[in-house]
Structures are given as C-alpha cells and as structure tokens.
Image (cartoon, rainbow, N blue to C red; front, side):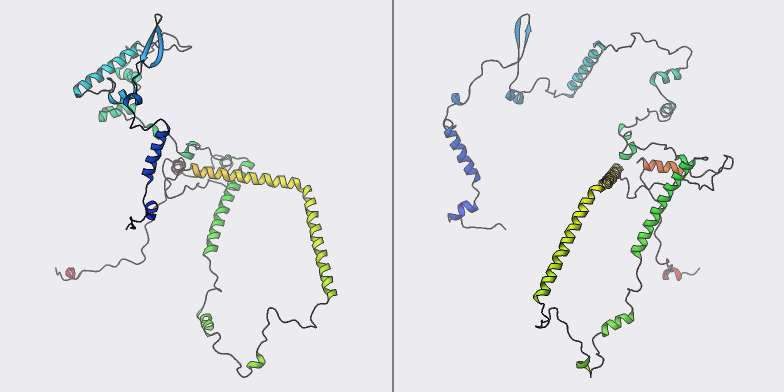
Length: 407
C-alpha cells in the first residue's frame, strides 16, 4: 500500500507532492513575459501572418521566362493528400489503374534506348536451326530446360522449383573448406620419406593427445585406498582421550609445556658486544644481496638475444591462440555434439608396398563423404544412438484373472 501523509501540514507539500507540472508552467509563463508578453493576451494578426509570395523550389527557364514550381505546405500535405496517392474506393477501378500503369511501364521500356556496350556488334546471328531440329530440342535450347525440368513438368505438370538464394550461402567455416580435400602426400602408395614421416608424426601427436586426456580422467577418478577410513580407524578416532594410560605416574610423566615467548633470565640476556656483532653481520648480508642483484641486472644486457627470441615465441603463441579462437567462432553449432576430425588412413613403413598390385585399399568412401558434409556444416554432427541399459530385468507376471481361465 502507498504511504499516506497529512496534506494539511506545509512541510509535506513540497516533499511528498509532485509539483513539477506547476513549476514547468510557471517557467514557460516567465519566458513568454521576457520575450514580448503572454501568448494568450496577443491578437491573431500578431501571432500569424498570410504568406502572399509563392515558395520557390527550383527555377527553370523556358524561352527566356522563369518558370516556378510550387511546393505544397506540410499542413496541406497532411490534410489533403496528392491525387496520385488517393486510392479508389472501388476494387474494379483499382484493377483498371493497375493495368494502365503496367501498360505504360511496358511502353516506356520498349521505347527506351538501349545502351551501347563497347565491343558488341549490332547484329547478332542466331545459330539455331529450326528446320533440322526436333521441337523439344528447340524448346530446350530457347528456354534452357534440362532433363530434370522436363521430367518434373511431365510428371507433376508444374515447373521445377527454383533453388532459394539463402541455401547458396555457406555458414562460417564452410566457406574455407572444400568439398573434396586432397589427402596428405604421405598417404600415397609410394610416398617420399619426408612426407611419410610427417604423416606418421601427425598421427603420433594425435594419439598421444588422446592418451593424455584418458590419463587425466583416470587421475581425477582414481582414489587412494590408504586415505579411506576403515572401521578400525573410526573406532580408534572415537576412543581417543577416553582412557589415559599410567594414571599413577601422571605428575612424573607429564610433559613440560613450552610457551611461545618464555621469560628471559638475566644470565640469558645478550650483551651489547653480541648485539653489535649481529647487527654488523646483518648489514654485510644486506650489502652482499644488493651487490648480487646489481650484478644480475648488468649481466641481463648480454641476454638481449634470448629475450628477443622469448618475445617472438610468445607472439607466435598469441597468434596461434587467436587463430584457434577464430576457428571456434566460425564453426557454427548445429547440434549438441562437437565435430571431431576423423583418423587418417596411415600405413607404417614396414606395411608399404612397392607395386599397385600388392596394394590394399583402406578407408571408406561413404564415411569420408559423410564427415565432409559435417565439416562443411551441411548436416549436424551426430553419434550412434545407444538405448539406455536396464538396471533390473523385466519381470513378467500372469494376472490372476487370466490364470483362472481354464481351456
């Protein structure tokens, strides 16, 4: 509920009540008084005037005479629209006007002069032979119809639907990925040593990354059996401090409590000589540290090359990270599963064959095309559906009503 206050008290008038409208009105009135008196007290001829001269938009000379084009006032445009903008009340008249305007546009297009293109002849000879060709071939050449279009027209009786333009636009990373990517040169049947070793290195790095990920998961899941509490350790923990052994010699075996700041005797106090020596040693150690720090700074001048190389490496790493981020941004997310690059078909150096006759084909063409479609973002990345396993077996039981039926 809104808070209520007393309106009969003067202190609540300004604090509680909003008087901005009144203040604005008073300010407006003061401004009018300053600029020539109140508007409500002035007569019509003082506020308004009739404009007798026509408003010039642009001048054009016709046979030495100036021709004026009159512009309509904004008020007239709002109140009385142009005759072209007025739509007819009858639909029949609207159709007539539409047909007339279409006819006029067509006539204007026909009478319009064609722009002369450089290097184009005026006469264009047609190489279409009407007499020695079939009518279907002529229609196909004129209207550029292919077999699919003809088939759809014959079967469905309608022309082929045009492919939408938005389907030609590729999403993100799909612009940079080709439909058919050439394989690594090391995957050929007779590769060079460098290319083959490079391919093997790539696969080795990929496999090592997979192993490291698996090991990381194992380390996270693994538990130390020594740290797990057993029943004996729990009992021992519960029994601590209940029974003290050797109750008779409690005072004798009792350990002395060592305080953090024990009291100092007069015999244990440091002499002035010892204090001065310790202070001197402290100062010397401080000087040595400062000298060593200065020496290190001076020697860092000779390490300029190493610093430059480190800076270059850092810059390279930053650029690589930027590229990875760009790739991540470019790759659109079509499903909840990420696209994973498939393993390459690799043969070890011992498995390589010298001739094509001994070569055995590896890989699957359909799988390769399927992964290519996923990479180009034409279809979403998927996984084979595995139905969830049942925790318990399904128990079947005969109903009593069914059991009672005797045949």
